[in-house]
Length: 183
Image (cartoon, rainbow, N blue to C red; front, side, top):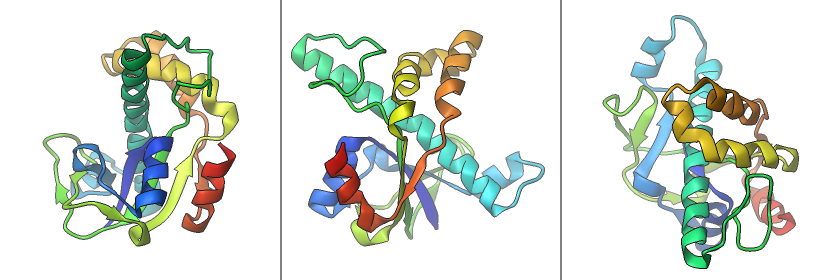
């Protein structure tokens, strides 16, 4: 099964360094029977885009947790317009596409959610998807409003939409170390 795992830049570094990654809460997203039922139309590629979008949105939450952890450690606050400063997270959504076995469907959590049976090995990774630098200001703002947007606030949804308008760039696994060196 192809799964889409939300990640952050430090998580990608861990994947490269340790050659495996155990996603937070073992959570990933996939084209599941419940996701197929939720859409009246759409081929596998379109449904895979939906699952990847859900993973990209979850990546925003991981970036927020990373930022909040840094803030707690430094007592330093980061303004939404500040990006890639020392001690702040890199405001780029990341999604790891991997082929796994044993993923458990979790339609009780959401249509596309699956729980992974174990860590993802580097050789299971099919590709990595990461925002380009020009998305960072919008992603930084979206990180601040992701929870409010989920509660239906139209202004927050607009801010979130600005970030989601950026397409994630595709990288082959052999390109990942070079990408991380450039960040």
